[in-house]
Length: 77
Image (cartoon, rainbow, N blue to C red; front, side, top):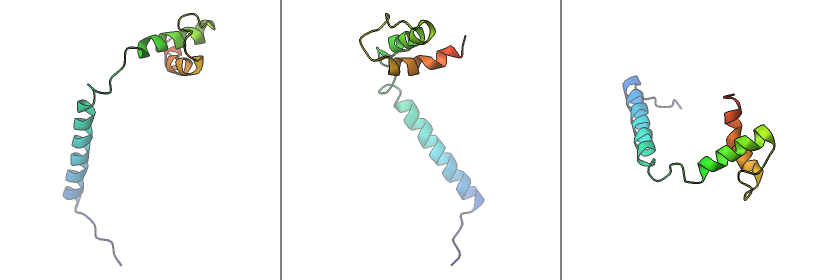
């Protein structure tokens, strides 16, 4: 049984509609799901952990999550 296919303009319109919906939802969620107040110190503490091996900047939490957050900064050196 042959599968019905969509015309090329209809497929393009559907793709554009999905992309527009994605963009709108992304922009609208910025206010609710933006960076929190404790993420910036975790990134700095993770970078310091990886660079110096010292956990003194933020010793309250386990170093794995902070180290993963600071890992991207090592590539900027």
